[in-house]
Image 1 (cartoon, rainbow, N blue to C red):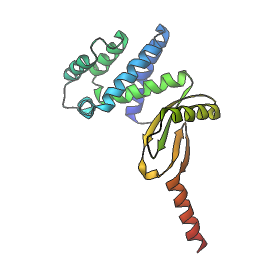
Image 2 (image 1 turned 180 degrees about the horizontal axis):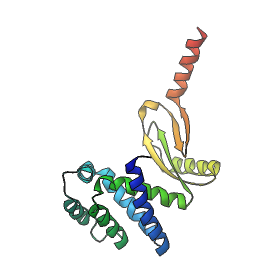
Image 3 (image 1 turned 30 degrees about the horizontal axis):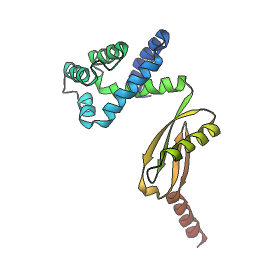
Image 4 (image 1 turned 180 degrees about the vertical axis):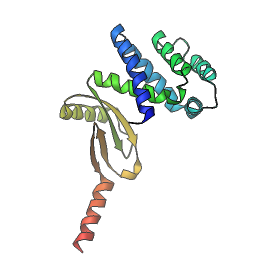
Length: 181
């Protein structure tokens, strides 16, 4: 286990345990999801938080301006504590670990599905229902679009990978034809 992952896990566990004790895990989950979405959708912010050159005070001021009065006080205190301990470089990692801990506590399995084109909401709902019944638990499904798979899908959850893409099927046919010669 890398040092960053151990550090991230310890900080995440501390907030998780505190939130669970106070009965505010759902609120913290919502906050963490919001903060992660903002960080992931803004390259400049992501780079700023990872930068060792930018002071922790500046990072804290920027986060305060972005999330002013939007986060639970415990979330805000946690973010300030992380920055105060000079752990801003691993902030997004800590939040990712915390989000996964909360999901696991709820029995929700994180999963991703890669498809060639954007799927309709109706089709996505059907996929989620089928997967939930097959796996036996709820899923937090992330959709990725990759036209190079040509069609079908690639599903990843837990430690499993199911590749039902057209590109892989074509590759397998090519290998079989080459082996037949």
